[in-house]
Image (cartoon, rainbow, N blue to C red; front, top):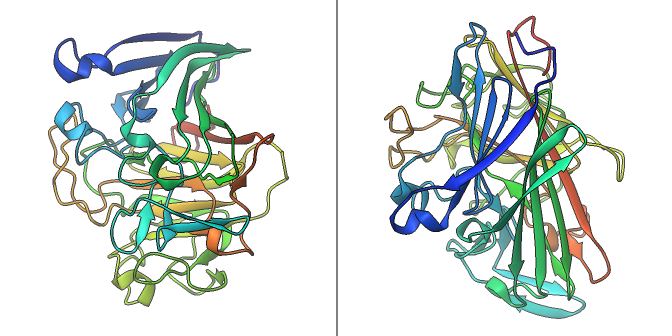
Length: 368
């Protein structure tokens, strides 16, 4: 069962490797009772979460690698903080106040995840932080004016805060010197049965969303929101991820699975994080509740994984080895005036929060 008592939160850090390139990258470890969280300064990355299953056996539930060559290569986005603009911007351009800015393209007619040298590829500065019953690490990155084509010098802070009851909060803050656009997310992949244990197709997913954004062949939204009712995108009640993933729906044939943004139900402006998703694994008894202040969630079922990354268990990750639950603004928002704005201007402060609430002992579990 999930713990029903508080545990002191401890925070420590050490070089990722004690020789070679890894010495410049730090691994921060946060612990509260049986919960252990690992964060890397490279990419402000959520590198691991270890929690018990219903029997009390502790296991790693995030996909990732311990090999530096993979962390710098095919696993570079696993758990990383993605920016300046998570997801896709069509035609690698934006217009602000009548001025067009050309962005660094990543191929396929888009700029994906902030460009070819995005925030996931930078080493962030880190410091310990304590707030009430929470402790963790705060990371900072300065992105100069014109970085990957985006206007404005941007300062970004990301805090990972573990509570005494084992709840993990990811909190973002940013300011800019010129009008710009900003969309930050964390790109973790989770498999509640344990990394390397197989696919997630039988795990149960609930999404607090009545609509989603259909996309074209570039994964760019092409029209208004569409209802999920009577489609493979209907996760309003818990259903296995794989139940309809292989249906001949036009939105699924191209990507080979889910790689789509769901429009979350309205949440209070400037209010606390509200539930966006619930993932449950009846076999291990683990569950994950995702709460956020963001308007959307991108669900990616690792359709394109073909063994390039191997986790700590030594298992190579194939298709559907994990699922990414990326809380964020909608894709290509700068080109869709009807979407919630991603503009950030001087004098404003961007703030966003996502909470990961793990539990174990499902189906009669309670949250930690």
